[in-house]
Image (cartoon, rainbow, N blue to C red; front, side, top):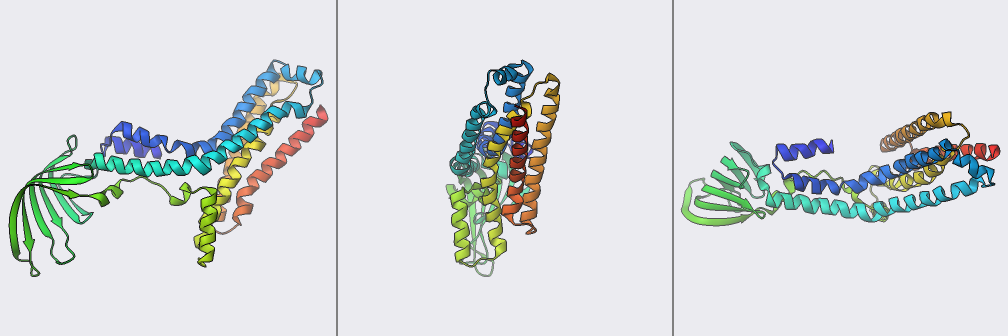
Length: 334
């Protein structure tokens, strides 16, 4: 969906491709925080399957290396992935979304023409309503522009007719224009002209469509702070629920890396080379089931059917149980 919107912005709205690619880089940390544990799991599977296929794992066991020693390195790596994911969620992701908003404003400032269309009456551009007859998106210039400027003191807006209009640096510059002011009865009160006049369009910047849910930008500490604030203000459970769900998501997701790292080793260790394809099949099944249960938990908790803690942490508990069963099984075999 994100890629489709990027292509639409580049091809239809004429936003520079480099700016959209720059914008995409700030969406990468949230994606990484969800995919790194899964990628680590597959990486461990590939590495230890290689050791099994060359009988190196058999040799390690033969020289007296215990299962705990074999699991030592992947365990510490799993903890490292856990810490990295927490760091992404607490520091990098909130900053990334701030940068997205800043870059979105920059794009709207430098390339405002992507929001303008020929032969179309555009309302609520700040305090203005604009009609453009001809537009050149490459130069951000328009010809034969009609502008209605709203006024709090008068029910009728001022009217400006500009031969040429330029959008640059968050402002609209009118050149060779004529203006008309109307009285309370809608009759012409004043008429004049000017060579050039600049009108700031700060509120126009907010029209750039950068989809960000505010709750997604919050760290664990920020979520806890907002939950306490809402409870203090005696807000309804429906208002607090989204924050509780996001909090559990951010806490539960990193923990999966620890279990997946160990489970990847346990799936890979064996004495038969023929078990390689079976191990890969099991790993893909585990990832698919975990993601499915995690998303189902989010949906159920969002609808208020199941407590967020139970719904979102259940996949991790099942993963921990599977890891424990596999560990006991491998330890008994030796």
